[in-house]
Structure formats: structure tokens, C-alpha cells
Image 1 (cartoon, helix red, strand yellow):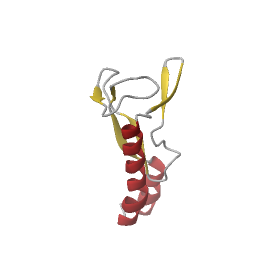
Image 2 (cartoon, rainbow, N blue to C red; image 1 turned 180 degrees about the vertical axis):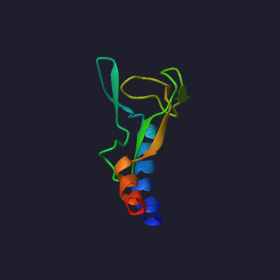
Image 3 (cartoon, rainbow, N blue to C red; image 1 turned 135 degrees about the horizontal axis):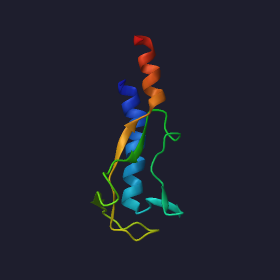
Length: 95
């Protein structure tokens, strides 16, 4: 990955995720039992996004601040993903 992408898009996504967790503003809404989060999504960043990573709903990390909407003190594990379109663009020159 080019250093410029790391310094801009990746750092932007990481900082947004950090701020979301530290502010306790993780869950945006809950509809029919499904949580919508304030994490960076696939369409929010050209390079990377945040997705669930836990084995199940009990695979959680403790939160530094309780979630404002749910009051939860722990949250399902999530991880950083590289966007598939970004990878396709990089790999097209090798195919």
C-alpha cells in the first residue's frame, strides 16, 4: 500500500474509529434487533473500513466508555478491512 494512502485514508479511518469508541458513540440505531454503528463503512472511505470480526455476539472487547445508546460496557469484536475495490484497482496491473 502506498505510504500516502496509509498517511491519509487509513489514518483517517483509524482516528474516526478511535474517536467513536472513546466518545461512547458506537451504536447509531437498532432496528429489528440489528445494530447500525457509527464505524467507518465501505462507502465512507476509499481504502478501508470497519467490520464485525467476533465469532458470535458473545465474542466482545470491553469498552473504555459505555455506549451512549445502549449503555453497553463491552462490544462485539470488530476489525479493519481493506476495501475490495481498492484491492482490485491495485491488482489490475498484475492480471
